[in-house]
Length: 269
Image (tube, rainbow, N blue to C red; front, side, top):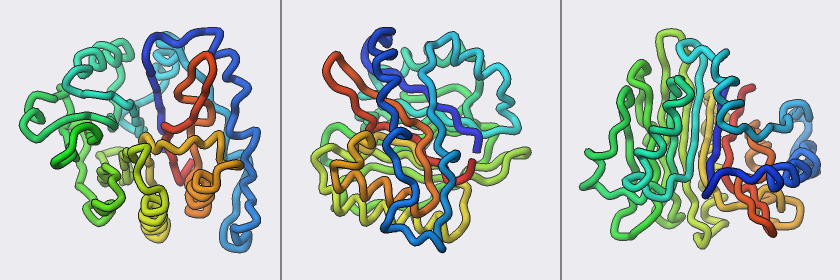
């Protein structure tokens, strides 16, 4: 899948911070041939994970100019932290690119069933998974109305995991079927329960040879995969199911901290 991403956090990116985080690369640390992975069953190529780049608005717009939305799949993900509050700003943001994304994925929509009808994007159909009985969280997928889609209800997390997710199969006249998912794991939820269920989902996709794209806010800092066991297990499980991260640099950073907790994973490149 030709998958594109853009991530915006807080104010405009600071050029000095962006330059300093160039050194914080997942690809500098990762060992694809992990000792716990059967080399006869899983064959990895280090070239599959390539360092990505930060794009400012103008350079991202230039990148999109050569991308045919009718014959290629594209996905954009944002942790929106209130779709009701920020949808207009998002629409203004993507209007500058003059590009129809195949799928728009949102985490932390903070939406409720009674406001869904207000949260429309022209030219897109929508699916929501809202929190029931609790505030915050929530995910949404917007699918270009030029494409057909069906929800994959067999791919789901239990209520015990506290994970919000949606999965769909999407296809078009000139686009083969691709399974797309959006996932939000709250930071204080049970990591083991999440990992067990997430591994089951990626294995299902692998067994059926689905071309898949999984986007979301996982609240597991991939830059710490070699010092944090649960994050290491998360990454190893993805790799063993042939999923690789498209984002290899920090997605959130300040003067003192940098984390890579938002990502897009693909199993075909």
